[in-house]
Length: 301
Image 1: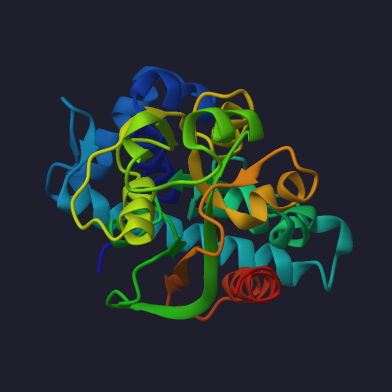
Image 2: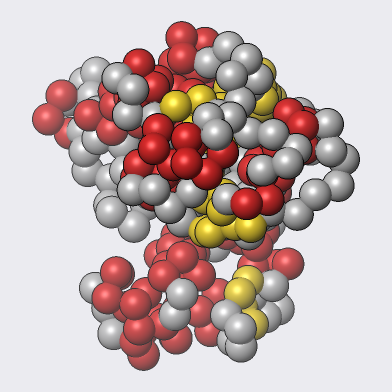
């Protein structure tokens, strides 16, 4: 069995995570030439090409080594945590490049996830949160780029475990004046096509699915604007750009204050969320899982 050089593995990860050799060199505080030499040595040891240069991405063999690298990071994070029992001042020595990554949908980041992760971060965990659509975060886990993800998919990957988190409720909202002037106060089959809906990005099917479910129209096309931020969607709606379907958690206070109105009263879409992570024995991973599941149970339906 090959024993791969940890520095060479971190070099491979830096190239992929930073998107190039120059930025990898900056992150690792070495020359670009040294980055190339470490990669060449690692490919020679592995006996295969690990990176495709254009576009820059890991080969299947490279993805396996990237997953191995991130598992090593988790082991080092566990060791760092355990060493604090013997030497409290030894904590927080993990290098910045040894980040522990998770993939989370933007709506969860904007509502309940950050408070859940406060304690692990306060203890020095070098966390990286990767944002993606809730239907696509599992791909990051499948490719070994993260150790866990929050997703709508309920099928566990091989070598991973899955925990139900609860359901996020979505409501359709608009600014009061906009809702009255453009919709007569509420969404109907006759007026939905007259207003723009502010979606997160082109992967976001929530706007169309909500309107279709609410109005009983199986096939419809919406006029959409795209704002790739959950909080940004809300600000756009407050500014009168259009209507939007957003997490009720995110706009609860604005609805109570009358700054936004529900344009589909009595109707909400519930989206079930799940936490998937590597099925490894790790106190750090267990701590992350426990923090997320407890926070989700308090915040979600």
